[in-house]
Length: 392
Image 1: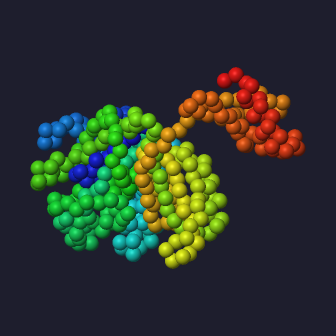
Image 2: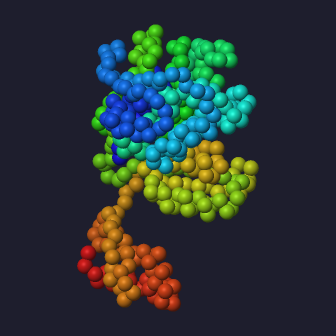
Image 3: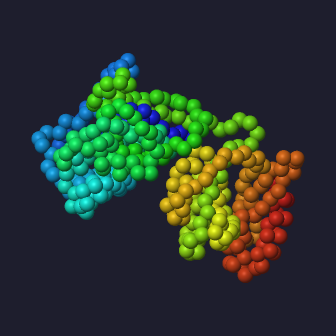
């Protein structure tokens, strides 16, 4: 399965993200055409350059005139007036809402009343909307990120001098893995933090993979510690184990205070999720001798991060354990079987020691039983007999 991995060894900003995506193969022409539908005036350019011996791409936005002070409603109007897809509009506005919420929390102001230059600047609009356009151009949905640097030093903003990361950036990084960095300069901008925490999941465990392309997006500042100010982007594919059996991830969490009605919702969300191989719950007693429920999800390793986040969001749990295991599965297939009531799907398992096992699809049999007022066991019996007589 193809994925993108943002290696933020030197931090991240909006222009670095777009530069790296362009270097990875996103179409600059498509980006220009799509952004031209926004009611803003800006000249976009990108160029190849060499930073400390590494070929990379830089992305620049030249906005004519000074950017007006805008509120969230103004941003929504600008994005809404474009002919961008509803998904691009929604994703972009979600990032702006996240930015405004962080600034509002810092200054104790409602996000709707936030009016600051950064959120209204043309280059910020281009960086946020352009990121989703470039991701759409590459056509990859699985996106991961390294831990982000938590810089020391100070930054001068309109309210004075504050420690790095800037106050809003620090809030935006809440819940995302970070590592201390003593570079003494801003490595993660508010826009960069809002974007990377929106589009990427932290890679919690190293999975074997094959890199197919390595790209670099250049930042505008130069570091003093000889480290290139670049964002590295890797397009790769996770390796499927070649030994017998396949690797799966087992995700678990316990809850003891969940409204029982929520479990029906959980079964709907995870039972139909394309990345969930199995989902089940088990009654348990927890450390204070309270009755609780163990929630278990079986998935493939590359889906463990996003499913862990979804499980926390939907269950109210504060953490998810995960472990890698092997599973050995029988070869299986599905085929239709003609019956007196029409075709019925039958699952065929080819057993390791020879022979096969057939099982009619419950939903099909259930529908027949209700439609013809028949016992379900009778429907099963007839279809099982037909399944073993039918040629494979």
